Length: 303
Image 1 (cartoon, helix red, strand yellow):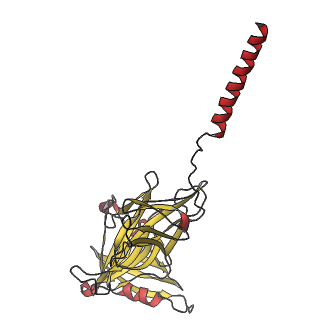
Image 2 (cartoon, helix red, strand yellow; image 1 turned 180 degrees about the horizontal axis):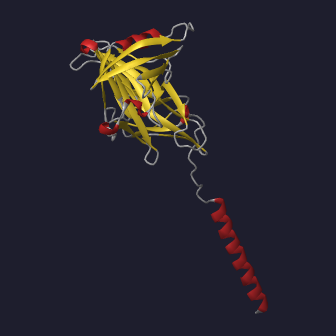
Image 3 (spheres, one colour; image 1 turned 180 degrees about the vertical axis):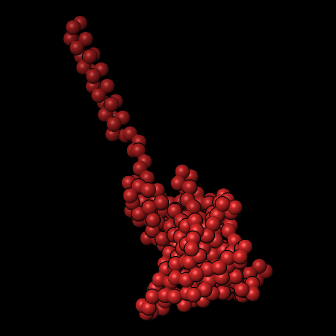
């Protein structure tokens, strides 16, 4: 009886050991998503569909069994920036997608460089058969995409000629991209703003013939008003000083003098000529100083 009990126990041990070994050797492997080591190999959401690039390109059937392909590929126009403030450089750039027809659609996307590899965003559609120009950083984490599009009603046979800019910002929680309103009226109190409240940076001069002049080097052109009715300015070459006369909102700059350094391709003369054409000023709720030029020819914007 004792021998039978021992044999029975041994059989139980063998059966349990066999069961555990079988479970171990046949267990379902845990899925580990691939890690993208580059933004050109990350996964993005384009038109509601997941697209995984391989060396900057992805190709799928437009429909099951169809010979037509959807081709998504890296276009370029990169800007690099630490968008999530984790000490690693992230990327924003453009993708193009051809769905098998005549259209070529352009999207702006972001790729965050995390400890687990690059994570791609949802793409924001810019347009069909546009002409991308430049992409650059704006204030903070804002990305500015510049491109040419067709005028309303123009055929796709016409080359894009209408310049456009879109300001975009990534929501890092949802990985979706939102458009930033460029003409948002801010919260500055124009009744409390004065000429002498700060040093002003020249941003642009917009003429009524649709031409715009901007500084080639940002923050080089500044303007400071002093209480003794004199002003000082900096340019991309020399320092400038002079006097200004006020009468209500009318303003006249005069007796302008500058240091005598010579600089190749400087915009100093262009800038001082604009100042000599100023006739009035006003402030905006976006915290801007606007100069109206003589004969209603245009405006200078300072911020």
